[in-house]
Image (cartoon, rainbow, N blue to C red; front, side, top):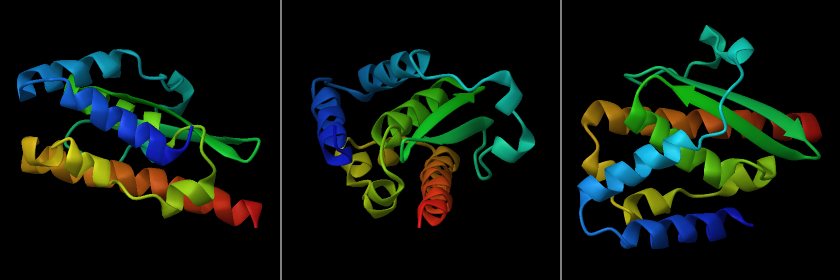
Length: 140
């Protein structure tokens, strides 16, 4: 499934909820299904800088696609990274680099986060794209 298809699926899912309390609960539920990072990768070098909570992300390249695992010590943040990993995991580095993240505005996520969490969201996206750039360089 393409990045755009997954983003559209997420937009559809979020549109089913009437208020942000339900959407937050949905994000928490998504966080519970997050592909968890192995303990050996919960290192300082895998912590996303700029997040108020601790968020660890690990990336591996398999068959020219990047697979992400992650974890966080906060339930909302865990839900946010779960959404991003759903969008970007199992995708080619080039597609991740070239993708936009308009779906975040379309579901209203950024405007419903505290300023520090919104900054953390930007840092998460930036880090996932940095992994993609690094792996794309290896493929060239």
